[in-house]
Length: 357
Image 1 (cartoon, rainbow, N blue to C red):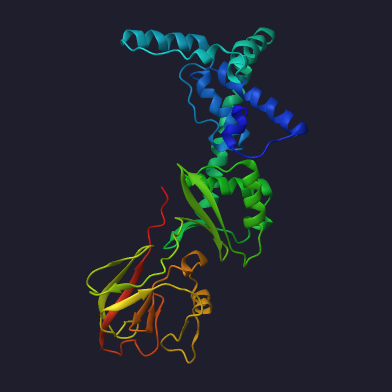
Image 2 (spheres, rainbow, N blue to C red; image 1 turned 135 degrees about the horizontal axis):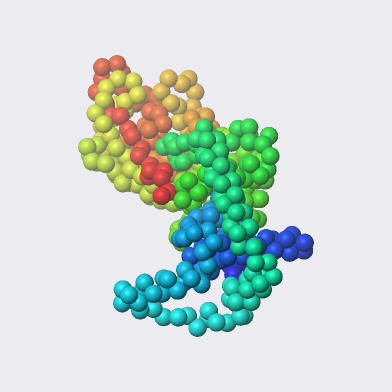
């Protein structure tokens, strides 16, 4: 497997597209090395970034000298400084092997191009500055678009999706990349990005779904709900156990978050003596919220309440004996809500903070 394939971890490109991409990566690699970037080792991620279609990160390596500085001179200066400081280093023997693409480009292709077109260094350097300026403009424009379409609520960081279907595909995907990058999430491969665009951004308004990305070996959940794309922590399966909540002044840890109770009075408060039993959905439960005339299944009630699908199985159900008296902090069941002036408890279900960074 080549370095490029390892970098983006996605599908293989074939045919003319693969050839065009290879030439483009080669041109940018030449630009990076000849125009005076720190070293070819620093330029290598640039090629991989292009291979993975993340142009917004391509020009993150900075110049260290004049535009026409020679890479060999920069290397010599760095080595001289290291010696003066008494530093030692180990040369990697693999750097001499032409079987590796980076060495082949650096030791064979780049000298030929420079010999054939001596002025290419300045020309490519000007192109590098122009492209870098375009990337800056793109980032500023996307940041403005993202500012009006992104936010955070108790359920996660979100991207507003309404109206995106009318946008051109490159702009939709660029906005998605900008959003993921702002949340410090890994950039998906080109194939995965296409799938997210097709299955998420262009899905029906009532569509839901769950996708995962890996970040530092940890799964991160990407879910769609009610015209928003959410990034949130994965929700563990709710335990099939009963938890006793003895003292309302003590928070009750759960599999996903915790239950808290604040002294309160009047409607919206739970007027039931502790201890309470806490369970989780198993299916088929019914409830009649306070103020309602009829009971409904929890499935329908949670949908109408707007609780995202990935949290519905984890919502804590509070029981007095065998009777359901409250559903998380969504509502109190009829017959167990405090009357005006009557003391009770305001239930809070605190789920883990949405931040992924």
